[in-house]
Amino acid sequence: MLKRSSLKQILLERAKKSRERFYLKTPADQLPLLVDDTEMPAVDVDNWTDQLSGMLYQRYPSLKKASDTSFKNYLVSLHNRLAAGTVQRRKQIRADIRANVRQLMEKREVFSAGNIPRQAAAMVSPQVKQILIGEEHNSQQVSFAVLDFIKEIQARDPKRPIIYFTEMLPRDSCVAATLLLMHVSGQDKNYYDIFSWLYHNGVGIKGLEIEEIWSEADILLQDAQGQLYPVPLWKSLSGIYLRNTAWLQTIQNYRKKYPEALFIIHAGAWHTGYIMPFSLANAFNPTETFVVHFIASRSALLDILSDNQVRAPVLAWKDKNLAHIAGFDVQITTGL
Image 1 (cartoon, helix red, strand yellow):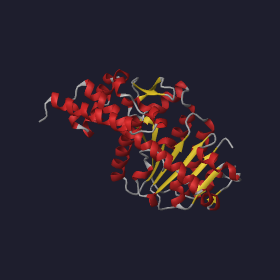
Image 2 (tube, rainbow, N blue to C red):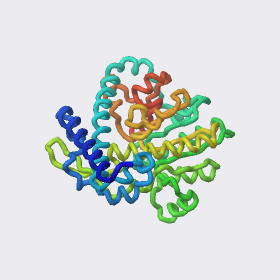
Image 3 (cartoon, rainbow, N blue to C red):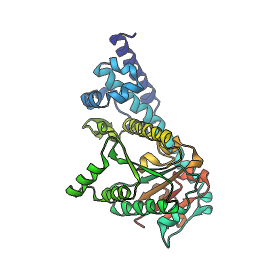
Image 4 (cartoon, rainbow, N blue to C red):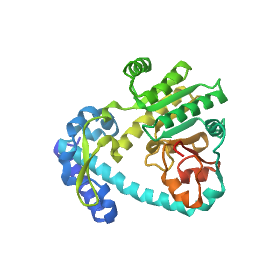
């Protein structure tokens, strides 16, 4: 068994190698995404070790014997490794989209009249086992559209059991108690309407979020001018990676119990899109997966396609290859 001092040295060496590899070989325009290993105090280790230790220790047993400094170095190195790969991937994604603009234009399914949620739901084949709803947060219009879409999905096959998973509820929450609290307090009105309809229409509801992630811990990033600014750990790449990993474990455990149920997974679009880092969608069989995004404003894809006069509030592709390039099967923009 490794001694504490030996493990500390190993982790410190790993952090040093991460710094050398990603700082010396990373293009200047990508450096702001990397965390400076010298800024260790920016990571609130007490919050992470006390609250996230269970999940982290399960994945990385050696961290149980790590010192605070080693633990900080591990998290920062993890963030840097993820950031370096993500930046390159995002650049490639935009290049792929631009290279396939003609195909995206020619093979798109655009509809702007009639019942849009119903038309979007009609594109979901009976073989689909999980629908991932990615949203732009904090928009009442988006919440209305999400609920209308879910209603249409259930109406297409009323006898098929549905389990709804959501980022917006803690994984150990009691749904009935949560609904009562939301009703009395008047908070989270947008999500209350969704949860309430699901609950009263017999749809199982399961929270995904790991409450421990909502600590006050920050990571310091650098802007283009070299100035440091704090980013909550739950928004950092390492935070998103850990959250998505925990969510996926919950979903997979339920799939073992309910192999034929339709899973609706509702979260921010950063967690669901095919082109997003550590996407939940890419963990499933692509022929059994459908991604629909609801946004309130213009997306990067619409900006790229705007030169081709694409203004419709809905973009969709039946070609799965194009869906994986665009990041979704259907995107509904409520603000257009």
